Image 1: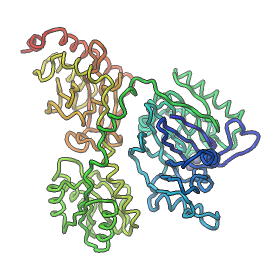
Image 2 (image 1 turned 90 degrees about the vertical axis):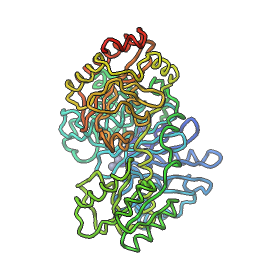
Image 3 (image 1 turned 120 degrees about the horizontal axis):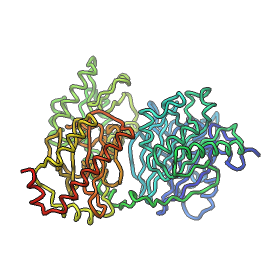
Image 4 (image 1 turned 180 degrees about the horizontal axis):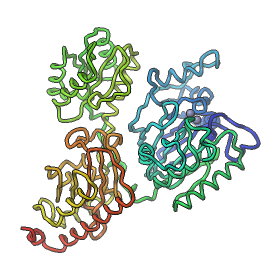
Length: 604
Ligand SMILES: [Zn+2]
Ligand SMILES: [Zn+2]
């Protein structure tokens, strides 16, 4: 894919002789995939020139506009984007869902008659607005993951994956640890997870470390922090972005030099540069882990079309019921109206309704509502989305896992429809089966040749899972073999199961790489948040698995540890896990050498 910078400046446009090289326009980046899909991230003043270029091209110019947040420097160019005034074009405008407003209303706000002569409705192109939350979705051949950044306005970072390459756009983000030199904390670790292994990271780096104490809470990063994130996440290239309007080109050069020194000191193998207006970067990944077949990924992830688009509704207010039924019909949902919670639970059990909407009865406490929701959930095997309609604002800071979401009444039709879509979307996307490795047929042959599948437990493997549990103080450790359709456990410490379906296997993800694969907090990771092993027993939150290789280099399985709480492993712990993995590798090698029957006999 091709990435072009149209605006690199933060806060306010700064045209003039001092900003010629890096550019004076505010935030705007375009992404064109090999197949021709056009994505535009943010629409600061830089989008004007992109619009002019697109308008000169022949034929319609369709695309998706991804807005990180609606501060001026990220939306001011929208009314000047030429393709929106061409009736042949179709544009999807996506941005973070506001707490009490939708993205189109927010954008319309800056175009009110008092401020601007053209209104949102004057756009001639067909425009669809989409309110986004954290999660993942697909545009043509592009996979997009969103994550909330740390900024005074609700701001989404975008991870864009296409053509075997990945780009992360993280502008307007402040470190979670404000004290300089304290390193990356847990929130930062999750940010690093979002950024991990990107071929290009475009990161906020508005300030220098010494300027930062004056700017705490303004929602921006220091150059030093941007480098630390790039190093920790092992990205290929870091583009310093959102340049301060007071910074001259020469000062940006100094900033780049400082960033490079810090990167070199940290033995960073990647490239560091400052984003410059008008420059284009072509991303093509040559990383081995990206050598997987993207089609396979798409087919193994649950597809929207396969989802059960049904909702069970139990509300006492007839106005709310009518509005919900209208929204459900408009979104193509089958709606089942229930009299009470018992009938609701019954509907979920018999018709497998994935989404349930109940009205919070007046006076019912949060504890009681959570208990009600828990009862509904207990009726089914898989996760069900339970939302409550509330006529008052729900308590924001007391989140109960049983209650998926709240719908505050009164709500507009578009709001109801967006909610329905979001619930369905999140269900579709917050659990991903792993892609198949590029060498899957050879890998399976190597596994089957071991002759280890479905053999009895052996002390020579069990000792490793026991040691792993003690060493890392975790309740569960496994030696898993990732088979064609299942993962089978050669050794299982702390869990009774001997196998699960491959689609829910975290180890199936781990075998795609060649180092320890870590899930810090599964509930906050869109690939695993709704994995049955996370939502239900054994309710895993943390996972770390080291791939196990046999001669020929094929990864047949993992040695992995798991916990019911989020965790972070430090470097000595990671090294210890690798070391244990190598010892299991040696046992596997011994298994492969001996006939299967003999390999088993030593413990029996
Ligand atoms: Zn900004
Ligand atoms: Zn901002």
